[in-house]
Image 1 (cartoon, rainbow, N blue to C red):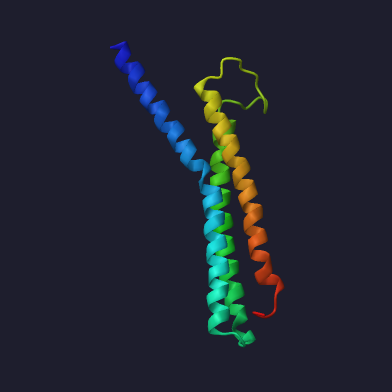
Image 2 (image 1 turned 120 degrees about the vertical axis):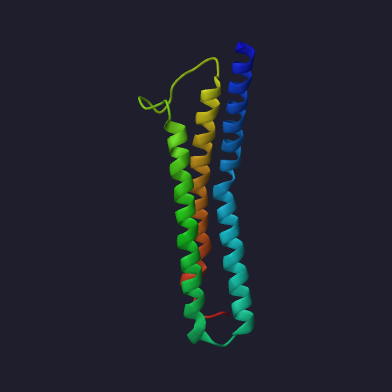
Length: 138
């Protein structure tokens, strides 16, 4: 009976760790999708309308909207990662634990996902800057 409970606990722990590992990729994935959509959208727009600078506002508004959506997704992911990192560690940011329990791994994955979310948010902002700083497709 106890072996069965231990096995079920291990499966739940493995499922949580697997979810944490997948969650780490969300911030960079959102950044990559924003990069692809922004630059591919600009390339297609400028190929179709090379001299139509009056329609360039459509492109800027589209990239601006995509940027807001990407930053919202990254912020949501960062908030979830922050709570995972801080779970069980409210007293201090760094807590020494020599045995390296599964809770420590879970908190580390939350911390890593939070840092990747911050880097991804900066990347999204830098990806969107050229759209707001250029006046033509040339």
